[in-house]
Length: 378
Ligand SMILES: *Cc1c(COP(=O)(O)O)cnc(C)c1O
Image (cartoon, rainbow, N blue to C red; front, side, top):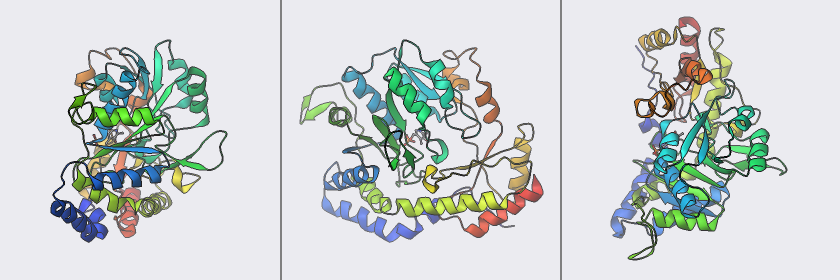
């Protein structure tokens, strides 16, 4: 029986293997293994791609979020105890970063249509302690819209984008012409280059982007022991630097960002055109191809049958996944903080979703075959 892997990183990286090996060898031969020109080149490349003045490489996506929040605390823009609005159905990293900084995550229900934070519910969640919002461009879909922009402006909220899943996506911005990259929409943004992300390293890596020079400098210092120059510590920082081998590898892959995202879009279109089973809910097809960079292609089914359906698909060789099966507020580590909190939209959604195989290297013929399996199996 043919098997359809959920994601083959070997296939994803195959087109770039030689250039990636050359890049890694260059760092090995250079004798420079912390910071240096490879990290600087990648930071500049990322800043240009995201159309922001500053990009700071860090160790991973969670650290990128943590460092932004801690930097804002250092700069007096946030205080411990302040509330930060987050989508309830995000990956737990978003919540953990907020808690780690001594801030309070306030979950807001998603729209079942976009699966992003429901911007019409944001205003009701704002209290006198709300200082920031952390939109997550979930599954690669832009979460920023006019309603959110309006609430943010009227309540003077900091906007910290969790852009771990949507590098290369673009949004329209109220009052401005054109389409602007995710990562440039708010005051600061966190990127993850975890190997499965749309631009993946061969290990852990992350970055922060911002137009604010003070924030960029503070994040950079915090990520390097809180030192602004050698052996001079202005803050009690951490070690969260971007590895130059990963930077060199990411610099290669970043050249192909739009090509890779276009390949993902073609695969999403192939699913949406070929899945005809009325028992399956399809993700919203974007009006602009860059509204969503299809980090995941997520269908919905009857929650009572979801696990059975996954097994039937697996029996036909189709590997699937769930992003994410248990939302943060129901995780054991948050049991006390969110005791009694009910988020019915999130709780129903997480039991309805199935992520299908999608990657820039997934053959379109596989997408068509998986669609037919879905049509006859579910
Ligand atoms: C992957 C991810 C992160 C964390 O990134 P790491 O590099 O794994 O630390 C944060 N937020 C979201 C939405 C993610 O998908």
